[in-house]
Figure (tube, helix red, strand yellow):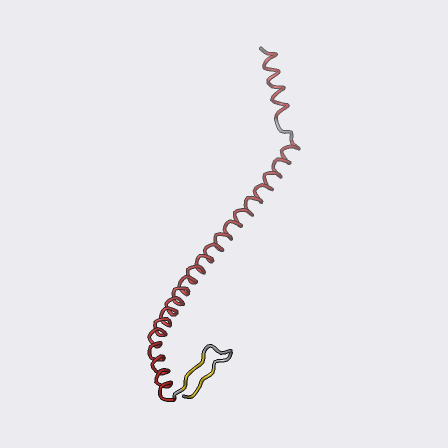
Length: 112
């Protein structure tokens, strides 16, 4: 049993860190801590960039909606003007007696 305890002590001494190993270990831990800090800083920067991007997306959605509403309004105005323009062209054609030839290479008109 004393021999067994002595073997345990010897095995423990073999597996423990030597003083030069402690310095290497501490340097390794310091390096890992520096890497960890760099990663945390990168995460914080990406979080800020994500928030800015989300704000830009929201602003673009608002602009898109405004453009869509403006386009819809222009379509409605144009649809309302089409009958008026057709009537004006019809009156002009009947007053002047011009008959348009849309089938020719260049659009031409003939006075009747």
